[in-house]
Image (cartoon, rainbow, N blue to C red):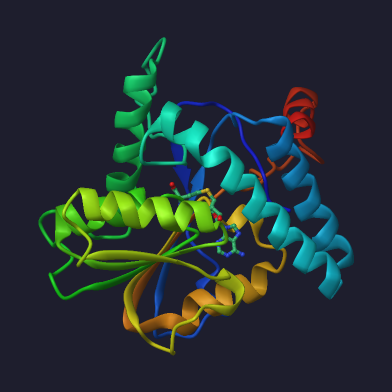
Length: 259
Ligand code: SAH
């Protein structure tokens, strides 16, 4: 499983393994260098991801999905109280000190803007009104509502958690965005959409959970329309330096803690 990183300051970007993908979609992969806030349950789920990846039986995949759904059913209210709309890490100024929760919320929004900029989608070249977006692993729909209100995009979000889907729809309705953003329970590895549906395929910190990374990327590509952009932000093991054989001991310790 690709998990990690360290230096809760900013993000480091890397280009995608696009040579393995069909040419019809452009993929931008962002690596979030973050310190995780992990609960015991979240730790359990991350471990479950690793186990399911290692053994990969169908039964384990079913159990894993159930576990992820339950995790987010139970914890989403807490995350929302703490972090608001978004359940992902922030993009911080490297020099920022003593970041408060409010700073964190702003940094979460900035993360969205920065990855859009990274992928070449900015306010100078906005997503047009008719642009269709799929938000894969949507949480309570923060990214979709942001994209819908800022760019007028039409967003469809999927999550394994019924509680999240319901909350995401309720928030969209409350913010007058019900016609622009809708959410449902569905599996990212078997998306309920025909091929070539979306102009922007968005996955913000959900890839970590996917037991089959190849299938995950295949599905992102499958639902992308010709010429679409795929934005995938996920935790990754950092690249090792030329003289390194593994992570540093403090990094290993942190990674173990997260797992
Ligand atoms: N992208 C959101 C939420 C990130 S939390 C945000 O930035 O706020 C991770 C999300 O991935 C949760 O909503 C969880 O339900 C979803 N997820 C994990 N595995 C999934 C799968 N197989 N199919 C669909 N969603 C999945």
